Amino acid sequence: MSANRPFLASLLLLAACSKQPAAQQDLDSLDKELTGDAAVAQRDPALGAALRDQIMVDPALTQTANTNVVRPPSRPDPLSVPVDDATPRPDGVTAADLKPAPAAKADCPECRKAAGALTLGELAVRQGGDDAGCARGVSYSAGWANRLPDDLPLYPDARVREAAGNDACGLRVVSFASGAPVGRILDWYNARATRAGYSAEHQASGAQHVLGGTRRSNAYVVYVTPNPAGGSEVDLLVR
Image 1 (cartoon, helix red, strand yellow):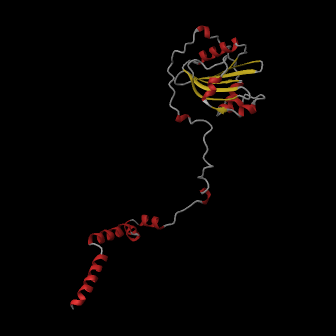
Image 2 (tube, rainbow, N blue to C red):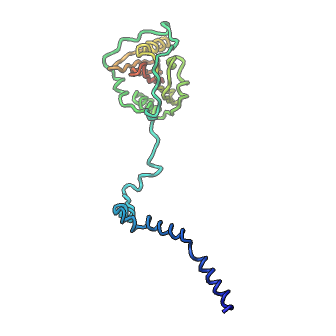
Image 3 (cartoon, one colour):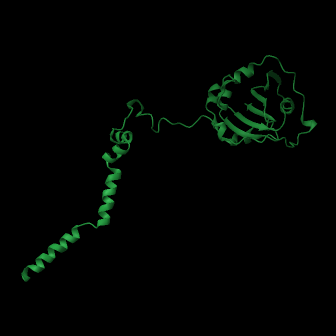
């Protein structure tokens, strides 16, 4: 009898090691009760059915979410740009810097040309002529605003929104805002252009005004519209 005691002690020790504590057994039982399919189905039949059902896949949409579908926009989202402060500021322009623009013609083919142009490049293409291909090849960078000709620079208080250009045809296109009213912008560019030897023609349609002209093979067009918050919105094209 005494010889079997070590053997029995070993069996008892193994049984004690293999048996989980009561607290752990309680936790395991509770976990099964809470997470088991039967328990879920009993508490919420709809949820249980959803967990057991296969995942539905639409074959028509499996190829739509890839890196070749999403492309950057052709121009910045206007809603992502902070609202421009159109509060009038001193621009340093004097009466000597202004020359009244010619009376506006009632018909405005340039206005119709620009209508619906979504990018500066497209606006330049719509000017027509032999440089349409060059206009399609413009690159975008704010630096182009600093490369306008001295005769037709930015208005003194211009706040550049976007700029593009192409040196292959000497094209510059700049979109900017100014605190000056439409008439002041037109008179300033008319003074600059005519003193540099350009012609000047003024067209208007509604609130949009266009001033443009040529000097030998060079040309310019200034689109000016009032900003509802004050000041003006301007697109300037120079070639």
